[in-house]
Length: 173
Length: 287
Image (tube, rainbow over the protein chains, first blue to last red):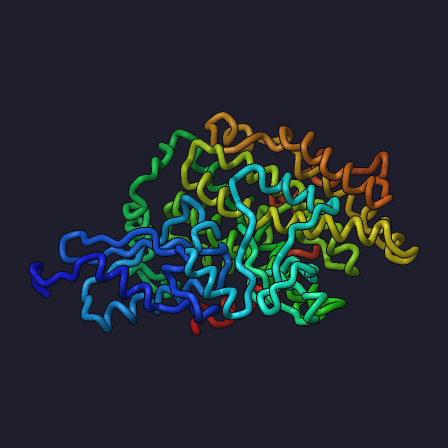
């Protein structure tokens, strides 16, 4: 690939926005906010990715999916960089991504995650000031937490006491 | 693209140097800034996560309720993920070509640096939960302090892990309260667990020469400096749980060497036998 034909980074971002998250395929990697940077260094495309959770088993698959997608668009020289800081936060999930989650049946994250106030906020909730999570199916706010940990590290298990359906909540981190 | 270094790749040292060069923005402490102590310290962090992660993963498929089974498996994943980051950095700083896998699978018990608390058998669900709570309350304070580390690699990993551990503590504190202030049977078991485990809490706050070197270099806090905050969290939760810590208890690993020095209980060898068997029997096996 000669230098003059290198696709613009806007085009790369567009391609990456078509790559689904392997565990929640309704949202893309760009919706999730884990692509931190895309740039050309000479004729090598460098894509910087941040992991969601330290031990998320999807991380390896995500890297493979990025590579497969970009190679299918003719990118030959590709480097994937892992970047830990700043640590990924659910605040980076796009508005569009949140809507897609809700439509899919996963309640999107609601509370802010600004660094040090988080635990204090959680302690106060432990004392009974529970955060209201809306049921993604019927919209009711009469919901209960079943478990802080759900089907993947990023989700908690909830149930709706109106429509009686269980659902996942994409918890804030 | 970078992939995990292959354990069978002959030129691991070159790969490690490359990884070090690639890491760019990082200020690597000079060898005279306590490099061997730094490696030792990183192994302590990584080994705590690895061994507790392995213990917690033993519940997978055996927990008393599906939600708890999933929660434990998720926490094990978090801890093992954190272990990969800490041991990966330990190998990088050590500069002898060992990666996280080599450190996890190819060291024997005497080379492990985890606290005795995390290697203790799971016991009943009460022991597992109480051990988790006592460790989580320490872990969160440690990670918070490490976010201010003079070494940006340490600070970055700590900032990531802290968010995950906040959820671990929220869950373990919640369950200690519910089961402590629960039925007669659950309360009895939680109190028995607390009494049994209390003797292993002192080791978390012992300062030794490695800790002193890390503190002097601004890399990590002295463990003893974390005790006041831990005491406060533990006292508040135990009070609400209607449980009482033993007033006086012999503390393992305080006056005599413990896990941080590589002197372990007999339990660690059994964990390693299960965890390391495959790599020992079939060196370099991959799938």
